[in-house]
Image 1 (tube, rainbow, N blue to C red):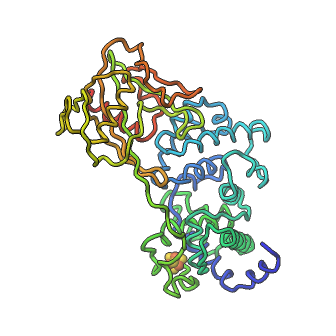
Image 2: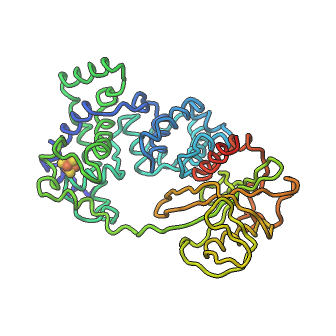
Image 3: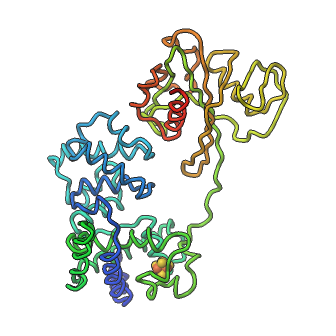
Length: 436
Ligand code: SF4
């Protein structure tokens, strides 16, 4: 922050009132989360990475399992890639897990296995940006490094009435400055008054929890940053924020000026795009065909059933000729039938299995979202003749890449041990339920 701005912001009386209000509220209201019972930077780092793009309630069991299986940086560095992917299976954004392992190896090599204190060293680790570095250093080491994630942006834009889009460079810079100023003020602020400290400790004792000790024992930098995140998660929510119970409502520009619903100004969102895929669960002699996604692709190294993208709109129909039967569905189609274009695409995709006539058994439809894509994945079961050692000639070639194990036939029991993408894990679960 420029010196002149910093001085003028420091003179802002709002800041001196905001910090104690946030610290006091956090001491009373922080959630009991497992990673708040420790100051181990490794444990906090894992939680911060898992929490990116993922809700707290989903992360808790993943974090517990990860910490049980890989309790140290050394254990992560030495773990097999399969184990890393399996422990992350279902959390999505798997690059996060791979970067965690790369960073753990870097820490073993450059820092003798000890998580670095220095900001530049933390920032140099793969998968760690300014936000994560700030979060780890403030929470684990009580350093006055700012954090700015979606929750903090929402709180700060509303409290300070910032109307500019926070993604824009200038507004974003100002938000970082404010976050820095707040955590720096917290570092200078006296710890919560004794009465409040006692209250927090008695709450801990009563709940058998070490949780709220984060607010008093870890220090004000840790507590201040977490209070901003916590307020954004619990009170200052995107829709229907609970302003009436908010500890900073009297200081909040958006609340005082009736602009809460306008902020933050995130601009127009890109419209969601529909995408449609068809997957084939091919079975031959009791084995199922799966493939591993190649390095560099989305969900790299995860497993899936062979699948193809087709036209997203299933409504247009055309006259086609086909040897095709979609069993158990309303529209059993045979030669020269009227079929929908999307069905025709399914036939074309199925033909890439190398088989000209086949019967498809609808297995399930999985709907999910990735970023702005709304994805529909239709899975069909296909029984193939012949030996499972023979892969149909063209299967998978459309997506075959130099790396990744394409086209492996495995018995159902073995599939469970592989790390599947979330959508294909659901297909596998349906397959399991219908096969047993
Ligand atoms: Fe958010 Fe309302 Fe609190 Fe302002 S008063 S910080 S808008 S919850």
